[in-house]
Length: 478
View 1 (cartoon, one colour):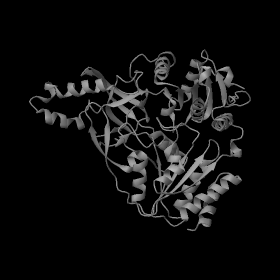
View 2 (cartoon, helix red, strand yellow; view 1 turned 90 degrees about the vertical axis):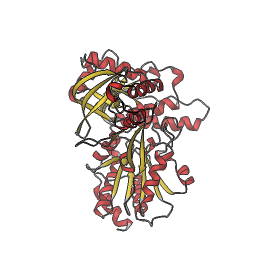
View 3 (cartoon, one colour; view 1 turned 180 degrees about the horizontal axis):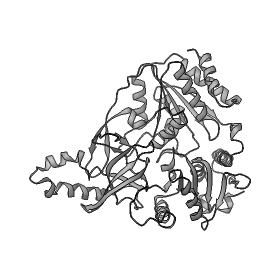
View 4 (cartoon, one colour; view 1 turned 120 degrees about the vertical axis):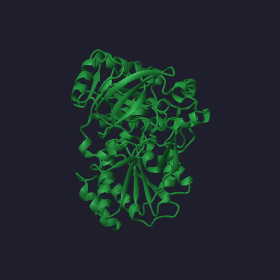
């Protein structure tokens, strides 16, 4: 199919008449897809701000590609982001990047609790278009020193004449520890020897004009641009508008429990509190479970949990995934029992994934209410030595065989989780909820600036239907 025919098919699938900018980006995307493949690898970077129609445009492109016989492979950095991408693409399957590009070989590293991906899976596609949503979350180095971005590029261009579209929003938070998103940086990608083109959507779509969520997101984005342009000079503080919009409101601490209770009554899985630190998330989770949901047990049916560490499964029973990602949110279906062993507490549970599949697994309870992101190295070493010295389990088995058994040991491979009623903004990135409560209490005046605006923009754009600003400071309000 030529570019003009593909463009016509794309525009036909749009549920609205595109503005000039959307039409230009649609034409650029179809030219990119139909141009001859470059041996160095073809990449298109699509930067789209909130409310500019990027998601709808991409969904139409996927449909047009499939009608032309060209395969589109959808991916995202986290399970929740993949679910959102799938829903915005007429239910077509979207993979997490990890699940698509790695052969998973569980292998706990003593003292770290990390699970390492195995060899990269082969890309057997020919002429496929790989489209990655929320690409601004993809970093060049994790805690193991591995680079998900480099592995993704290698995987895609190992296929024959494959192309890669990276979609994201550079106004959102970059990967942890980075000042900019490398996956959305055209200059950086070109430095890797790739042939890169790109486009940016900045004009808010007409159908989003009445949204208070998008109005405030746009105001914040413009404030960020002004702060960057001002460099070391003080820039004007953006003023959020909460009056005159049905989807935005300011919430006091006194009214918060009642509003949360109403939101949970509508949907427990579509309500989230976004806050600024693990410590505040822990405080919110504790208060929500006790004073709003009235839960006294440490873990119970319908508890919402967020995975705190990438987890690769050593066995594949029916319905069990091969991988759950750091940041994936799951629900407790059943609790079979709890136990204390090796100085730690565990629970055997049945968990429900967002797509509805359930699986049984052992989870670690010690992390549920911890203010730390992960277990300390000391805790890992204690667990490691506790398992290997357990003669009741291993009898006369040599130490080398005991160590080898860690790959399938249920305690060493217990899933790390935290409560998921309140989470940090980095954990929320890539997801969307109907009701989003953004914690703005106790923000000091000297915190006003680009990092806060970027954080707030990311938090606000997680809201799909209603945005609740918790105790916003007066200097941030119009």
